[in-house]
Image 1: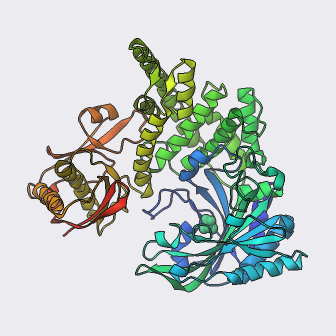
Image 2: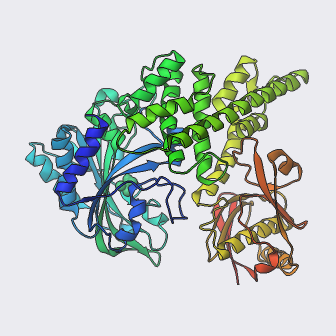
Image 3: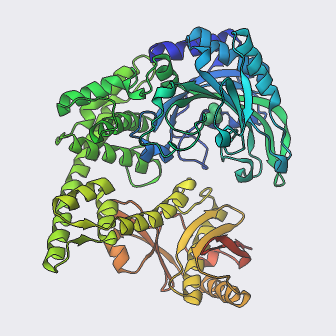
Length: 622
Ligand code: SER
């Protein structure tokens, strides 16, 4: 079945069940500073799940555009996408488990025609430490439905340890697999967050699909969540009936349903294609790339085929991101648009596409969604063209730099590309690791992979923290108090380095209007005397009412000036540096106060271990 039919059938089917259809929200959420992208259907529904009245009533269905930035590096296999559509249905304290599960079963088996024998189910095992019971009710509903279809569905627990036995079809898993909230398992949920047990639906592509050869799971027992390649999650029923309050998970006053099913994956299941890139949602792009590269896509594990998949995914993502206002840039959402475009260009070069191709490929993406979504075509194509031209120039410069490195090192008698050197190419010119590896091999140079990976991990830790919140530096919002605490964090880092030593570097931060939380490298507990000194130093800078200066410069210049901070993927472009007198100099996206005098009294309220070699401080301003 083609994607248009699946989408339409889903919405029509739920309309018959009394659901009202809403359009997709933008990929760039409005009025939600906690997240960069719409990455699940739930985001636009939060107020209604919490109890506000939805103008269309208590039953809603939609197809929501989603972008999952954290999956960028995963793209390249047969099933991961950054941009996808989530078919959703919603009950705001209206229908619950019984209706939801029966409807979705009927939709998949009767409307789409999926064979029930190839559907497998998971449910929540329960969590004694959080006082949440096992979801046996859900399992009973599924069993009954299978039974009506002549299938005896046995339930099993701990298939992740024991593997699956003949006849077993419904499996319990813990809160890391079968609990859904925007922030993951119950432990990770912040105050006031909704969540609940979920029940996922998997499609079985058949035992022959187990990727025995390459799979890291090849020696382990197969189970639906083992990622060996045989099973494929196509939908998730979340029973949103709990809330985090005073640090505990408590039953919420409303019993909501959040169902989400990946359109790309349901289409793939309906076409019995374990390769989503061979469905109508991607194939036109793949065919187009075949034409311009004069190469064939075989759907294999080969490097070329991976390039095809990355390009196809990233073109679609870039078209949708730009359409929703995320123009390529080095900030916030635009940074990710830039990343997908650049990654697509590098992969295209590998396929021998040496001229700009993104803008002229956009047309193919629009056609896939003809009549479903509108695109500001001129803007999309202009942005793609601009970014691709710019990056192709950077690529050439990066190559020059690489050649210089090679001749410098060869002159000094070494044929080694150090981790710091190759990481510089990665970070400043956007060269992916594989490309650097390949280039080094061509020159008969050794590539210090460990060194590169070390640099990469350091950087990843920093950028993960930076993208965890809407604003760089882990800020929850750009409100006045949060901004003050952000400036205080800069002063504190400088003070820590002055008191403890220059080995201290930032490992993460999370700043809300109430407090700052700051992780940094230090091998032992910070003593009360040291903490007192840090506090006093920060308060001294506040008392001096120093101006906070902001300046743009190249990354290189910032490093030369001794700035500290997250040296993120800036691809050789300008970075912002904040300087506070002679005391602090940091690369940072802001925002900050104008003068330190605005901050008030700085107080450290807690110092604790965060992980091995990393300490955590919580501090406030009074
Ligand atoms: N919120 C759930 C998910 O994203 C179901 O929509 O998987």
